[in-house]
Image (cartoon, rainbow, N blue to C red; front, side):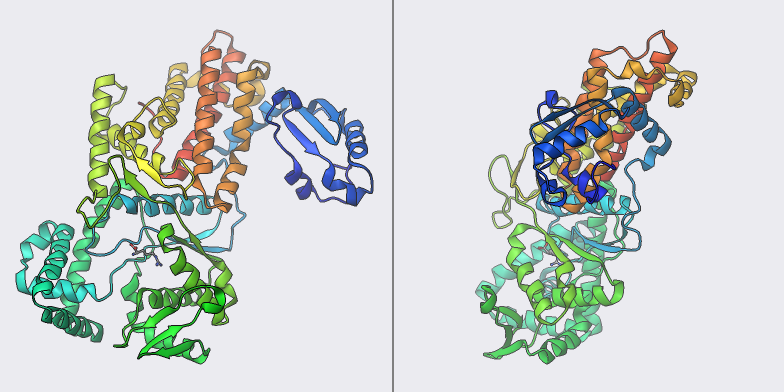
Length: 560
Ligand code: ARG
């Protein structure tokens, strides 16, 4: 890059564009931004660059059109390099060490104890899991936190209802449905007899003071609920490093309130304590109620301070619904006003609502759809499709699991996270659309081609220098190779924007490009060199699909 004195290589790379019209080159380089550094008119710069790099063997053709340099790569060296790179890196293709030494907290899922883990929660769980995987792949030191909603006055109500109308066996059999039932029953009864509210408050105060009977019941409700959540996490293949939820901060409240007091932020208001955020165009934040009890926001402030002290994070990410935008704006502002400069490293990553095809989801109208039921149904339906289509598999149940659950996950990560979306069975389980099953099927199809080629032929393909590269320089092969080449950049982009859908989109593109190649070309041909080259390219595509699916939290079946 001697042609561009005074401009850093990174800056140059950032300026490179991919023209939408392929006749304008594989890459285009606009020279506008160089005018200042090089003190020349952009078209003159473009012409100069053109002349200097024209003879480089990386390029088949270099053209200069106005202020642009249009680059046509020499296909063979390009394809050879990228396929060779993927073969040598395998499962690590796209991995990097950029994040080494930097701690990123990813908080996701965070359901409420004794409340249904419904299809709305799948968003945080699945998006968060993918964001964690992306950061992990980029070398960051990640911590996965499930900030459980396991604290608050509702536990006083639940304990009260359990003591009056509950029974142990029901809780053990169906913890969440049963506990939720107690909660509903409590409200019905409290309408008739308001003294129940006082009783529940007293119980919660006891819980806060750590009285053994109340703590024991609360702990039991929590454990039973976690068992139920655990089943869903197992189905999704999801794990956490910490379940430090709201209750974890109950004994850290006094200290955080002192700190807030010292920073002069807290104001008295009718016995409650608040932070006035009117200067920042936000409503007042209620920090403690009249009876001194703390709130959801107080626990978030305490949690952030704790995380900074305990983990010294580089970034502290929260994957939480956009309905909570104001809540996050408020508490992050409060952290900033407390004088913590790391407030800027706390990032709320919001997402839109899921609704069902036949209307919106609402807890109030009892139209909750449980996530576990959705996943189970996806697996059952997939099993039917597998049997009906005669899908190639050694283990129907395993494939049905991988594809059924993968389908739900993939749909979840298909459009940009902030968009509201409608959950549709037909879309989720379609094997032909831009869906999870389609990408997984393409992966399995490549695996099958490789199996059919036999071990010896595949072995040969892995030595890219022996392969006949000219056979994978045609249009469809070259388009596929270019997409494979982009994979590592796509991962960085998806991580930086906290947007797994960028990756989802890309692996659909790779799958489609492979299928075009597969349609246009015959892979298992007589000519050994040609076969080796085509197998190598197919294997590179398979590697990208596998790594990509893995980063979305999905399996990549070898047969399907
Ligand atoms: N438990 C909350 C809910 O289900 C989500 C918690 C989000 N995380 C947080 N740090 N506030 O609505």
